[in-house]
Image: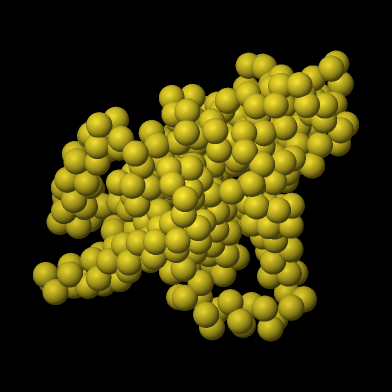
Length: 357
């Protein structure tokens, strides 16, 4: 989820020096799920190996966990697109044209996997960390604007940069994506170039954590709007997701995608429920259940039935699944880039200024 800006609510409210941020649901839920706090605890436990029973539990139930969180979150952007008021008017290409382009891209990639398919996968792997960074920025900005009207353009740019640094780290360090995908091997393997990229990745690794902390202290001075602690947590959580593990431990990285999905589902359902409850006298659980139910149905169609259709057509399941996941991701990234533009949608601004869903 990427966010450009939100409305400036509560201009006259005096905030504490250390601003915890105004929760959407309640502080515990917001900090653990939307801020990513629970992910840090779980990932630390998995990485340390101190709790083998946790790893066994996750591995045993991995299909179900991924389905209800990560797969559902991909479907959520599409469900949001088609349930968003005025979507067919405002996003005609996204709603009517982009699905056909996605089908065409998948057909081309699966027909010529060596020529086109590998580039589709590399595009997905390159774009995904940027999408994570954009979601972290969007969440951080939402909480900033819920707390203060005084965030200026410079502060937002520095916040965006802090969120983008982990993406830049993965761009230069992730095999098969980013720099290693776009730059010819003859150039990448030059000793001077390899040394420069290694040094740059090292700088970005440190900066991914130092920059948000520095921004936090910057905002504490000069009469600036304080960076809410939950915004700082969201940015640091994203850095933890993308930087330390290097995509080397499958269970850890799958767990990262699960928490990213939970974070997205929480925000999109809060927005959806707010819209529906403002439109009429309806209990909040009804639109929430309907929205999430639609996400589960669509996720099952996309991630479980669609690959089987290609198997029936004579393609291998592994290849079909990988390319379908890649095209679903790219579609998700494009849709998100448009449907979360808060500056152009006053309904999002209203949600940003509300204290609870």
